[in-house]
Image (cartoon, rainbow, N blue to C red):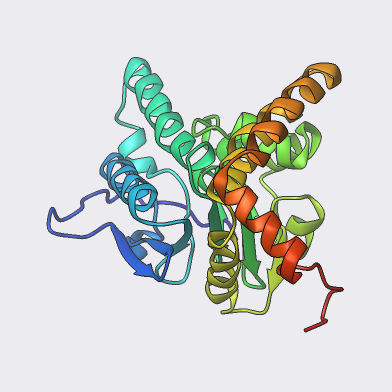
Length: 272
């Protein structure tokens, strides 16, 4: 069953559409429109941006999750159908602007997914660096059945994750994909038991928060750009990023900790 935003688009002005909480160095940013399956309205996008910026300024890593039974059922169709073509373009570009602050910001983002991750919800999740789905999660891109097209960056981000053929299949047929297949298709990196996605995402974010800030920044901002370059260009840029990273005071301190005390020694999976 494909679940998406309903036609009633009213939001009370006093409703907090996005929640914010700090857990140590990790910001927890929650989509909070459960009655609409967290369908994304224009006001919702603005509140996402406010809290993404807040996380950037106060945290070393962040977790994005959804309140209620679903992560996000995508675009609020009732609001979208009223827009002119120019308004639609501007709305799409606004999504691009906000989601890019997640994809190319200074801190890593982890998405905790459950229930519906549909349309714009999948586009939002694809902007994060790491995605964790619990076994209740399902993915869909029903834009073709609605007579519309992805507008939140999906044609770039989702296609790069899954490949164009798989994304086209989802859009043309309207099929939904479960968490296990989503992992095989690279939409998520982890699948965990139902109800455990959020805590798993927090644990991973806490680990990432202990990394060097520059290393995290390079992974978030340099790695995806290098991946889109020609091989020789990518290797050239890698040399500069690698060299600069090794000269930071934090890198020097961490390397000395490892050399002198063995701190951070890599262990086999499951080894304590």
